[in-house]
Length: 159
Image (cartoon, rainbow, N blue to C red; front, side):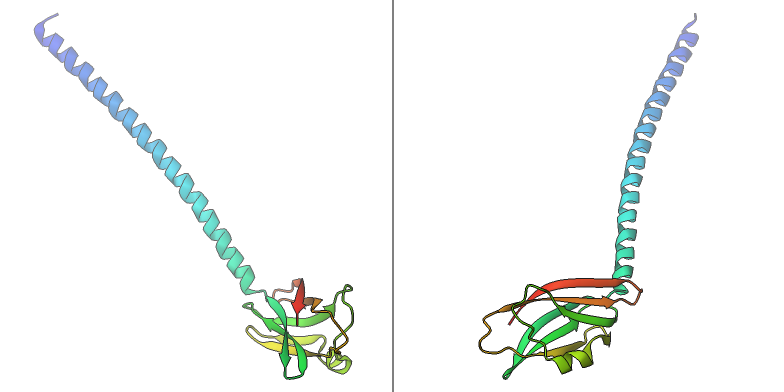
């Protein structure tokens, strides 16, 4: 082999080595890119799930109840804290209450409450005799959401 052939062979081997090194780095970069794309895909799925949850929540009401004293009269105040209106709202007392504080005529007129918009409230009168020592009432609310689903919550309300 001549000097020229040896130099050409060495240059060829060097080119092959550089090519393998470049191929190795390219594969490593490609693998890292695939990992980044997987993370991005998971993040996108979570964002889509969050958007779906917000859309579902926008079609649902979130009712709360509290008892307030207005002078000598007690009232159960029901408030819609959700983003959608609630329809056909039923208010009920659970069985573990000592007595029924609801004023019958007021309750009959307001139950079921037809429509309660976002941020709106309504109240039910309560009559609590001095002889009653119960300080909290277990109540339930049931309503229909704008998307047609129904929700129910049970709360303990202190006076």
